[in-house]
Image (tube, rainbow, N blue to C red; front, side, top):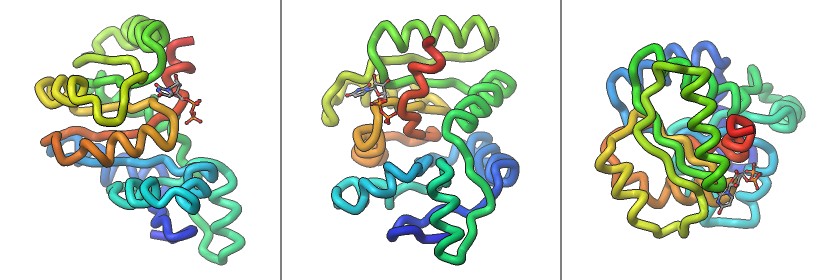
Length: 193
Ligand code: UDP
């Protein structure tokens, strides 16, 4: 763990993170909250204390963005490698397809998330999609939370942009009994393109 501006970053390479933490968590159904911290996210925690507390409740805060790596070097505690959120998401989708794990997608505009689901089914024919919802909901919307609770997906990708996505996860995390929850920013726009 390396702290940058009070944010504890997991100093691990991608292969080890995946094989020693993420895969076992998924197979044992350990509930987890993962943040891919880019410099914008870390900077934002300085001015938004609620956001900082939300981020600090995460199980894994992994360094995304070259700026984080540079900052860690300047501080004399070099972080091993950058782990881009989009790569992590792509890996998780492939792993989910292979292992028959179920995925839920929350975020982006209705048309974008629908297009992403369509594209994913074409690219990963065996993928199990538990459900999806567009991201234009308030932080205390309970319907979507209840739906996810009843579906019990293994993976929940939350693309509400930051800081909303991490605030949403931190606020509702206690209501779920399993799942890997991850904020993925603009990824649905990429997958839905
Ligand atoms: N978004 C959303 N709900 C909101 C605000 C944004 O679902 O209330 C979605 C938006 O449609 C986009 C994604 O969040 O797909 C990321 O938005 P943005 O690029 O602004 O955030 P960043 O990538 O910087 O986190």
